[in-house]
Length: 158
Image (cartoon, rainbow, N blue to C red; front, side, top):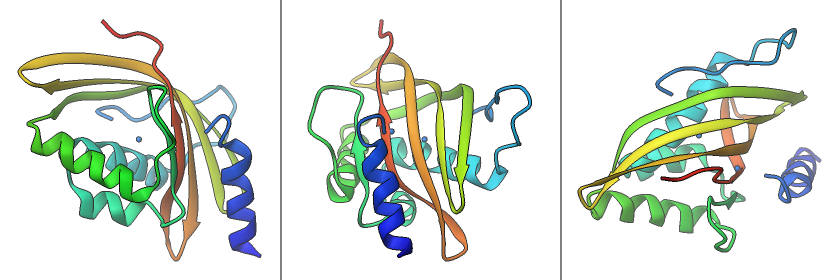
């Protein structure tokens, strides 16, 4: 039954659904967001941009669905890990990462994060700043947070 509820949450937010140098802000009066969850998000983003497919793979379950920043197809776990590996192999690196705004909703063992991000990456000798909004899903499973889905968009690029 737990697997069904996780799948239902991931599917229901797939139309919405998307990891700081600084941790996140929250809406006023909201319950604090679990610091371990924020650390897992940070770890996922940094692992992706560093090509650390071991660490990223530990965070992304087999049923992972990712909606990227562009208009490409949805990504599964294998595609996401391959994208991370290729970014690193092509000399890409993360320069900085921030989450200036984050709000959350908790439903039992599932937390949905809504927020904004800013990432500066370097690739091919050029720096690029990406800013956008995110929706990320986390599930507490077997004593740790896993990241079964995200939806990212771009709001501005230079």
